[in-house]
Each structure stands twice: as C-alpha cells, then as structure tokens.
Image (cartoon, rainbow, N blue to C red; front, side, top):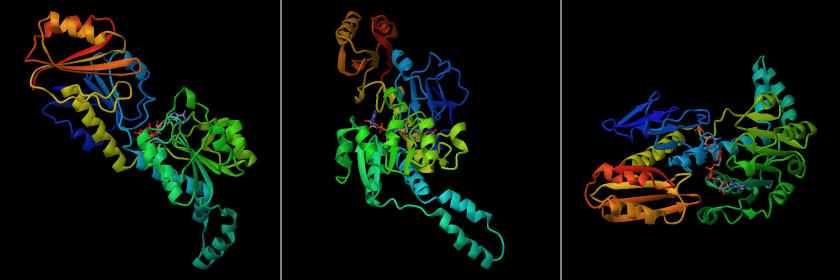
Length: 390
Ligand SMILES: NC(=O)C1=CN([C@@H]2O[C@H](COP(=O)(O)OP(=O)(O)OC[C@H]3O[C@@H](n4cnc5c(N)ncnc54)[C@H](O)[C@@H]3O)[C@@H](O)[C@H]2O)C=CC1
Ligand SMILES: O=C(O)C(=O)COP(=O)(O)O
C-alpha cells in the first residue's frame, strides 16, 4: 500500500488515478510515500523521511524546498502547461479590465437608482468618466515564453496587438509554436521601452526578483499597464504604486495582492485565481497523479523539476533505482557493487541534469534486498529504491 499525503484540495479526477486498493490518500498521513499539493508552503514543514516524491498539481514550485529535496534524492514533479490556458484567459481578462476601466465602471453602474428613465440618463452622463483604450494596435511585452507566455503572446497577437517577447531560455518546441508575428526583444530594457502593456510569465527565482523595476517602468509608454499573474516579488511594488500615482501607469493587474496594493484604485487584484478553473484543476491533478504513480510503481521520472527525465519500460525482474550526484564513475561504482553481490544487470539507463543524475537498473530475476545494501554507502548516492518484479 502506498500512502499519499495531500496538503491542498486535489481534484477528485486526479486522485481517482491512484486506485484505492493500492493507495491510501489522506491529508493527515504521518509516514507518506509521496506528497500532493498546490500552493501549500512547504518550506517550514518537517518533511518525513518516508517521502520519496513530491507532486505539485500546477506549475510554480517556489513553495517547495526543491534544493533540500534534491539532496535527499526526492524528485519534485509538476504539471507543465496543464493550467496554462486558464492563466492565459485571466491575463487577457485582466488586460481588458485595466484598459476599459471595467471594474470602476461596474461599481458606478451598481450605485444607480431610480426608475428606468433616471437610470438611463445617469448611464449616459456618467459613462464619460470611464473612457478606456483599445488593446488593438498597442504593444504588449511578454516576458517568459513558456507554457503560459507562449499562449498569451499568440492570443494577444490574434487580437491585433503588436507583441514583443523576451525569453533567453525559450525551448525549441515553444519557439516553433510561437506566431511569426511575435517580435523578439533583444533585451528586457528594449522590451519595456516600447510597450503599452507588459505581462510577466516567469518563475519567481533569484534573477526574476524585482525584474519589473522603477527604471523599466519609467521607460514604458505613458498610461501603460502591468499584468502580473506569475508571482508577487517579480515586480517592485513600491515602484509600481508610485507610477500608478504619477499616472505613468494606468493599471496593475496582480494575482498576488498584499496590504499595500489592495486598496489602490488602479490595482486590479485577483485572489490567486489564475489556475482556478475546473478544467485546469483536473488537468494538473491528473498529470501529476499519473507521474507520481509511475514513479512509485516503476521508478520512472517524468516532468521532474530537479531530476532528469528517465523513462524505461519495465522488465520481468526486479528494478533498482538510484538518485545520485552527477559525478564521475557513479555508474562504474554501482555496477561493481552489483557484480560483487553476484547480480546481473539486464538493462541500465542513466541520465543526468545539472548536479544530479538518476539511474534505473533492471536485474535478471528477483533479488534479496540485503544484496543491495552496499549501494547506499557509495558516496554521492542520495536514494536507492528496490522495486520487486511485476
Ligand atoms: N497565477 C496562477 O495561478 C499561476 C501562476 N503561474 C506562474 O507562472 C509561471 C510561469 O508558468 P509557465 O509558463 O507554466 O512555466 P514555464 O516553465 O512553461 O515557463 C517559464 C518560462 O520562463 C522563462 N524564463 C525563466 N527565467 C527567465 C528570465 N530571467 N527571463 C525571461 N524568461 C525567463 C523560461 O525559459 C520559460 O520559458 C510559474 O512559474 C508560476 O510562478 C503558473 C500557473 C498558474
Ligand atoms: O500553478 C501555479 O504555479 C499556480 O500558481 C497555481 O496555484 P494553485 O494550484 O491555484 O494554488
């Protein structure tokens, strides 16, 4: 029986991929084999030694101590692209809300009273206070052309915007999928200097902290809009508020409000709503539950953010998986330890990614677990698992 600890509500469609005959799923499991979560902040949590994998039903992993898990040989999985359409749609909604003063105009409409003729008169005289700007022909900068940024860039271009993109690490696949109408910005400074609106779609990591800075905002066109459905901390909030007050910016759309932003009339705050659609919640939960199942049952690593992708069809014998440091002679030492134990390797796959590597070994027949004990004492080995033949 595998034990799964859930730290957030995970879509039932996803959880149903883990059959109850072999999976016990609980929000209170004390010795879990794996953890499933969304935005729960794990940094302060004592993560039990029994945890072999963590599955983030979503994209961002800044709520998970990924480095600590890497050192324990624990893969952290996410669900790339599974909520990207949901975020794209809310980005477009936010951009339109900011451009057309939709929220204050709605608030005005809700205050109207009287008979139909009175309301109609008030509507016609009041609307001049909410005149907006069209997004058509305006320039949108999209920072980060991953699953979300790619979709936002293509959709905005289809709506008639001039789109400029920036992503020095863009994947080949996404570069192919990007509309050829999207221009490539040579630098972030160059992007900001030509934009009427900028939307950020990068992870919150050291190089992206404060990326939307005072200087860059000042270089934008007057009355520009910033959209941040990525993470708080990517924009310098103090600079954004000053630019809203001076009129340099006309709107700020944020999915991660804080005390300073909440009451500003030009800030459009959403309660971290980007991925909150039934479709996205299901997609994410299904993807990550499948990946956790494959890992627990077959040691397969797919869509991990800290270990390489290692997919190998299962043989009939026992399987040994090893998460280890990416240093010379690991495979040599592992093979020697197995040979010393009299074990014959049927298949071996080894892949590395940065400082870490992962090896799957299929053995001939079944193996006494004691014979595998020497593997754990090889320097640089982080986690060893023995999966008995199917
Ligand atoms: N508001 C919400 O509910 C949601 C927010 N997010 C946030 O959006 C972020 C992006 O999500 P996805 O597009 O799915 O991730 P992704 O991993 O597909 O795309 C991220 C892109 O950012 C690029 N990038 C990384 N560092 C960069 C830098 N310094 N400058 C420019 N580009 C850089 C990468 O090359 C990659 O193409 C997530 O990390 C998460 O923080 C994601 C989903 C939902
Ligand atoms: O996928 C992400 O990065 C998100 O921010 C979505 O978070 P959530 O799963 O809605 O708590």
